[in-house]
Length: 272
Ligand code: HPA
Image: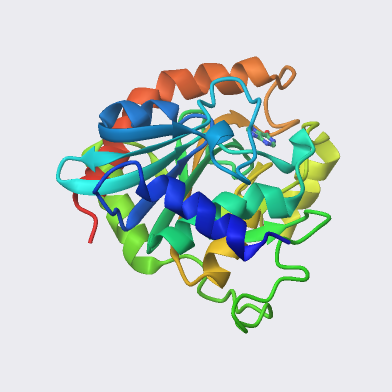
């Protein structure tokens, strides 16, 4: 569990970055790092300088907070995230989300890279979360009570329909192939077996990945509006000839980076 003092101290660090007070936060996972280039920056701060923030060693994740504007909209960007598979606890992984809520953020767009399970998904497509399935061995809400707010969280409307509509419009603008689907979270760090992917398809999953769901749970507990967006960087295990590799994931992420940047810039610019 994270202490209140730490949360307040971390939020104060972010407030010192400038006068802007964004209501929209965007967490950039693999495939979305270039979105940071669309920001007219007011201030940046490495995660290592914020008390309690976990530092990620994933290649390509910058590991910094950026506050600035996209077009006229103030935004707070978390460029990179820590993962459960890196050895962090889910309390550590989700600490930045609690800090965002303390800071005054109202909506968060969580992005990531994922393997496509649905037959129609192709590498380079995008998927907006309609819902999720968690196969994680832990839960960040375990043991947490926020100001008396129940941890028996209702998740029937976890994903905000208004944000989803705005992302759909943004995808049209960027000419991105956007699907809606169910994200299934695994702990990683290994990729799945083909048998697991066949099982996940039967469970109703459209894409699989190793992040995001813990952040969704904490964001909803804190009362934030949430959207989840995956870049489908590869077909999941057994669905394409050849082996899965982190290099393939990174290569697709680089190829689609420009489209991701256009889509999210449009989304942020029209955020209400
Ligand atoms: N499986 C799990 N996580 C992933 C994948 C995958 O195929 N691709 C990108 N992240």
